[in-house]
Length: 313
Ligand code: A2R
Image 1: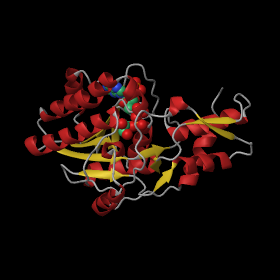
Image 2: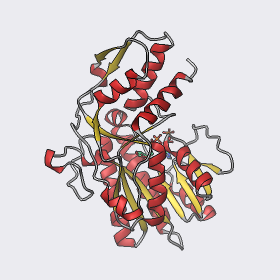
Image 3: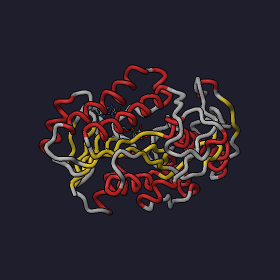
């Protein structure tokens, strides 16, 4: 099988490529942005800006992949408040460019669009755990763009018969994630405290929010299963199914350290609108392709902290 990972230079891309090549034996090509450096053996690596449809068309015509994973995004909620226009361009227009380029092909690759659990937004207590056809009430700019991407995917699948599946991925974590995301941020802070380059105080945002965390290596397995066995036009939640308070995550990470660490709330880390609980029902993906996460949260936190301990200062 020939797979193309679009936007593979970020956090998830290398994990997905590794799974596709090493565990599934696929022939894999990856796109990255011009500024990214990506060294992965045995895969084709191409620079691609998804805002340039001609570049996408040329690449697709040359590579003719069976499976396309669309990972390219402005993926930070915090940054989406600061630069809504860029977030809308990359996440919506970029996706439409990709779908339009796919529409022009003389064959139908299977396509997986990566959305987010954030799309559900302000969920009501009795809606948890959330099923895929729950009302979407996005609470931030990033979530709004991902909801729009999801709707566009469904429209292109129905109107043009494209073989598109969509996922709503909940928080995924692991080594190598940028510290704009909460678990990487906490682990980096603890590692810096241990190295003596930071005072023993953790600066944190909203600790009461409950989120669902899954190891990125489990998440990419779900993507590979869905692109192969998902039903076109359908959306699947990808997550653990058990939301946990950020405070609990923080305590678990602090407990992995032998230092005496204090916690302080930093107003700069509080988002303008925060959604109290996001927890998925993962029955649909489980029934469709038999996926459920396997790696324990404690294992992921330990490995992520270890990753930050090994980073140069
Ligand atoms: O912004 P960069 O240079 O780090 O590149 C990001 C890339 N990207 C683009 N690719 C092509 N054309 C563009 N105009 C463009 N703008 C950004 O998408 C980055 O390499 C990649 C997304 O990777 P991350 O931000 O690390 O996201 P992650 O955690 O790998 O998540 C993958 C997907 C995203 O759609 C998330 O929104 C979703 O899963 O949760």
